[in-house]
Image (cartoon, rainbow, N blue to C red):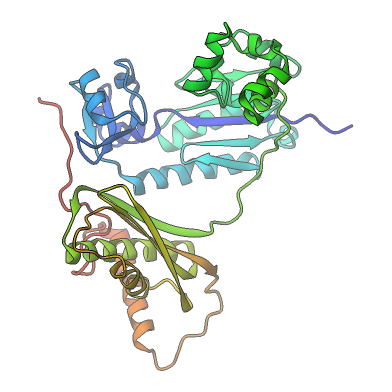
Length: 401
């Protein structure tokens, strides 16, 4: 008989805002909103718990968030800092199990079924992870423990921040039954409103409905919701395959009409992609650009290179050609993005002798990486690009003293 699964869902609490409060003591205890790029068109990425008490929520328009919480301190996102913190937390997960499935930058599923003989019961593993994350990363994390993924996810959200909720084996349906249907994974506002019209308010009431009725009304989504309400979720924890591409994108405070300015931004993005590739020890041969106009039209193009690269100049040259093919007099750019895929490991790559111009440029960029790692991103960079991913006119709103 197979061993029953034991799954953790780990979710960092108010992640982006928590990182900012960790790194900036003056923000601790204050209503912090991470988002941008500005008050008229920005979106909330994450709000601290102090801001959430006013009703501020992720994905909310910034203008509405400021109406709800006028005293909020708005901080522009620092994605590199958040990615570094997420990698540190992910490394902690992997101490306890190799079966880790990231869901987003701030949450993951962990299968600890086979880890318990080494580290103790699942609840003890969860507590140890919380302690490690607090001690080593200065962050709090909420964890749900259950026999199936969907129930573990619901459990992790119940007692935030720094919560630990354990659902014993066989008690999953009883655990879910009294909870509001909005807690169920997959019930959005529209589905919730439709179920409310039927008088369905709790997950238990949803579980008691005939599956055929839900399927007739909501199609395959209805059948899935009925199964989840009954704690039926056969999905296993699936560690992700290796990254298929590395990309950077930038949404601008003001739409860009000037082609030279757009090219400077593309150069900075290409340089950031190249730096990330070299940090991973990867090279790729498929350059892609993502372009979004002021009319919210998104355009994507890609070009295959003759050989794999991690050279920012080579990546930019291809991105430049793809971008210029879409330039029109009437177009303004709201977002630009560059990525590189088609990975091929550079291990064992033979250097050309004597060094050609491309290899000299690559070695120069490696030196630049080392300087930036030691002295900061603004220490040394290509003049045509400027500091990688540094917005031309950063906007943020600081609370008055």
